[in-house]
Amino acid sequence: MALTAHRAARADVVPPERGEALPLPYLLVVADSAATAGRPLGMVVSQAVAGGARAVWLRDKEKSPGVRRRSAEELAEIVHAVGGLLIASPGPGSEVADGTQLGAGSSLSGRARRAEPRRGPATAGLVGRSCHGPAELASAASEGCRWATLSPIFATASKPGYGPPLGVGALAGTPLPVWALGGVDGHNAAECLRAGAAGVAVMGAVMKAADPAAAVAAILSQLDGVARCPRW
Image 1 (spheres, rainbow, N blue to C red):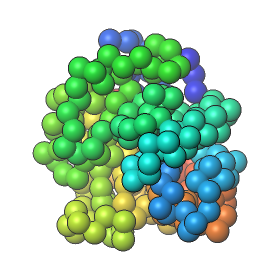
Image 2: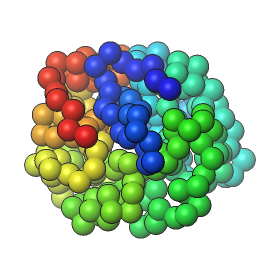
Image 3: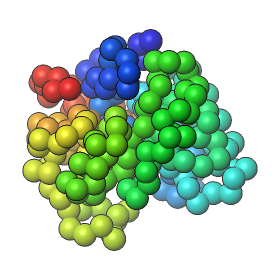
Image 4: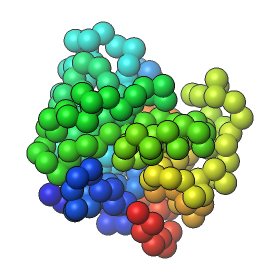
């Protein structure tokens, strides 16, 4: 199964026990209603998708089970309508997602490995983890995660408890594909790919933008200009 994606916004990740690569967009939009300035999450994500986003990570862990489940279902409908990919943190509604994003301290359990993918075998084993340094990246790779987010790369108000920014140097030579997260926007996204990231994960620059579609288009335009050779 090939996922529709922005023309230059893909990195290949091979699901476990399969020989074919699943194209994943270089841009991952992190969706959290706490960052939308009071606007409905579905509306902001819909605008982001209109701007070219083809992968969305539903974080939104603080919501009640019912609200979170409805958000997941709404975002799945929006993203799947354009052939995109929905990733979700564990919790209510995650069963409608195509992949799972585990927290830094979470284990890739047998249950996560065996979870029946919503969209068939091409998305089997799509489990990633949030990481904040080399040791966590190594652990994620050894456990079989297919990608990780690494943060914070740049200074960001959304991650005040994770110490100083890691800088783009942390993106070189990682043991698994990494989405650079934390302070990434339309001005520095390309720098992350040049440093070795498989892609960028963006929350504030899209969720808080007055025009999410324009924000996404600006980031993708910058990524289009980066010549890359696949490393995985």
